[in-house]
Structure formats: structure tokens, C-alpha cells
Length: 491
Image 1 (cartoon, rainbow, N blue to C red):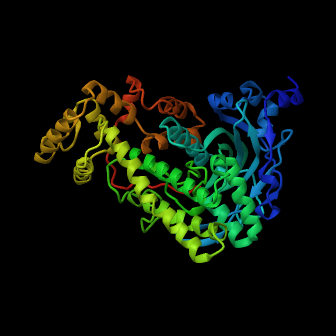
Image 2 (image 1 turned 90 degrees about the vertical axis):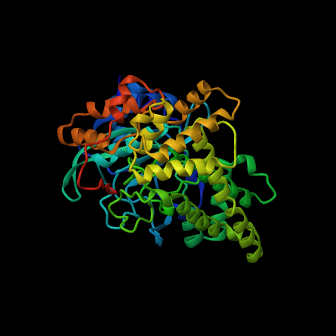
Image 3 (image 1 turned 45 degrees about the vertical axis):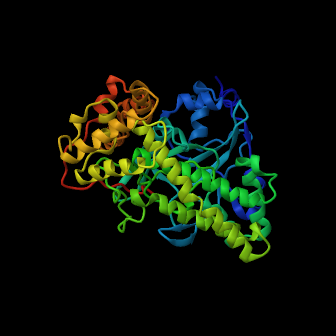
């Protein structure tokens, strides 16, 4: 197959609506070519969903695109400008090592961003080299696909390509480029940039674009910008609740890492919690625990308040009235989050209906888990499969009393125990991407170029609610270590 023919047959179908926004919002430029690209991993199921030809993507021409060495027909690469509060401090930012290749239109008409990470310097690199190391790119691939398997809105990973070049971080590391697929890369920080560096007309253009792309159902509302704020709040409340329900810790919930679409985005020092503790932090740079597991709902609310601030000129001509509208909308977040979280926790415990004491039943269980350093995921698995003896606090007076209350609670609903069991199975994953398993896969990939460990991990993570025998090994806890697990941004 010739390279030109392979390019045509790959199935790319680009449009570039973001490039029609005011030019202050981006810079057009091409990726920096790399010397010796090699395809490490390609997401076949995602490629098929996008309407792409897997065989063509694996050809030399397909690899040239995924490496940034060849621009496919119809693409218009650009680096997006945005700002952000990083650990509470406002900074002007942008795609310092990423490029939006374009928006691909799938056979079903869905519009998705195709973005490179590690594709070279941009005007927003701030002294960085614009490149990425293979380890962090594979980490994002693993975690984002695990999140997708868990049913959590997320960007996804199409491919990772090694560049044949080394980059310098703490040590010399092999370089790589990740191809990421997202509903869009519009962030809270994108609106902050427009409000800070653009005109009100620029801000309105961005808001109108976002409405049309992500929230067309409210475009015709009387105050569509208020509806935009309310819709984003609603999506974030649902998203963060899903994070909490599986013990996911994002690690850097800066405003530039919150997607307006409601997807999880920018997997840096992320990880999943083992022993339940709301104070859990994995990121090496989060020394004060700002983004700890238990703080994630409050940080989401803080970020949404920054988003609301950018919209004030659009909400009402009178500033006082605009602030009142924003505050009223923001006041709904806590209720929406709690409703989503409580509903999810009821499902994890096999509860179909609602009773006022459900919240205390849940909080009592979590309190025991924290006190006894119980594993979050495996505790719910033990309840799901009626194996309370597997819990570290089994036999304690507190658990015995709690267990009786829980069984009585299940008995007060119309649904059978079999139905409760089925609900719990579909709400409690058999496994999560355990930190030691992720590190094992990354070490084999980076140090030995052995990708089989990662491929096996991805396979069992693809359907975490299957509860299949081969998944059991991946639910085993790591050996005790004297050092706490730490993750790094990987820039």
C-alpha cells in the first residue's frame, strides 16, 4: 500500500471549528518532526469506533501522522491558549507540549478532538522542550482507558509512539508522543484566558461556541450563558461523584485541568486509593494536600466559581445581578454532588430506594474503613460477594452491629437479595489500576521495552465489572512498604 493511499484509507475526517474562533485563542503551527518513530501501542477498539482503519494507522504513513511527521489532509494543527489557577495561583498558560491536530468527525457524526502530547515546543512552552517521556504517556494511556472501562467520562488514548529521541528530566528518558481523543479541550482555563486577555466579544464567541458544541439543548434559553454555567456545574457534580465512588485521585485539579465537557482530563500524578483515607495524596508536588481525595468536591466547587467569574459580563448587564445569578447557580453544586454520590453509594451497597438514615449507614462504614486502614475497593467486593471475613475489621463489635443494620436495610426494600447482589456487582469493580501494577507495567515497558505486562493489565481493566477469575490476581494488595507511594507530573 502506498503512503498516499494509506493516508486516504486511514479514514481521517477533519474539521477545524475551533480555528474559526478569535485568533487570540490559539497559535497555528505544525508538530516538530521526530527522527525514528515507532508505534508502541494502538487502541484498536477506539480506532474502530472513530471510523479509522487500524491497518492503515499501523502503516508507515499512519505512523508518520501519529508521530507528527506528516499532517493528514484536512487537519489544521494549533496550540490552544488558556490560563489557570495552579494550586490557587493564577497563571497565563497554553499548550506547551501539545497540539490540536484537528477535530475528527466520526461516522455517527460525533465531533472529537485529536490532540498530540509531546509533539514539540509551542509559543506557550515557557522554556520547556515541548516533549514527553514514554513513562508518563503510557501512564495516561493506562489510566484513561481504565477510567473508560469504569464508565467515567474521560479523554481517551488512541496511540503512543516512541520518538527515537531522548529527553532530559531527572534523568535521560526515551521520548514519546501520545495521541489523545477528547470531546474537546475547552477548559475552565480557556474561559479564564478569554476573560483576562481577550475582549468581551472574544469571551462571547467562546461561550457561544461551547454552547453549540457541548450544550445545544440550552442554546435557545432566555439566558443561555446562565444555562451554560448550570450545565457545566451539573456535569462536574456527576463527574467528581464518580471519581469518589471508585477512589480516584486526580492529583492536579488546577482550573486548566477541568474540562467544560465534563470529561476527566490531563492525567499527570493521578492514582487510585488503596486504604481508605480522605487525606490521601499521591502527587509529589501537593505538599499541603490541596488536591487530596477528600478535598476533590470542594476544589471542583472552587474551580467552578472561577468559571462563573469569567461569565459575569455575559450573565447580566448589571454586575450585582450577574453575581447573584452566578451564586445561585453555584449553590446547587453541593446538592447535586451529594445526590450523585449518595445514589452511587447506595448502589455499591445494593440499596435501590431511599431512607433518611442511609447516609449515616454509609458514613459509619467509611469510618470503620478509615480507622482500620481497610482497602476501599476490596471492602466493597467482600460485601458484594458475601465474604465479610475478608475484611480487616471483620469480627469487631462495630462491624457486627453495622452488618446487622445493613442486612435489615436490604430487607426493607421490595427488591430481592439476588437483585441487590446484581446491583452491587455492576457498581463495585473487581479491580482498579493498582498503583503497583501500573508501576510494574511501566517499568517493563520503559526499561525492557516489554509491553506485554501493560497489555495484560489493559485487558483486565477493559471490563472491570466482569468479575472474571483472571481479574482476581489484580485485586491483590501490594506488599507493605515503608515509603508512601508517590506520583509525579511527568512533564
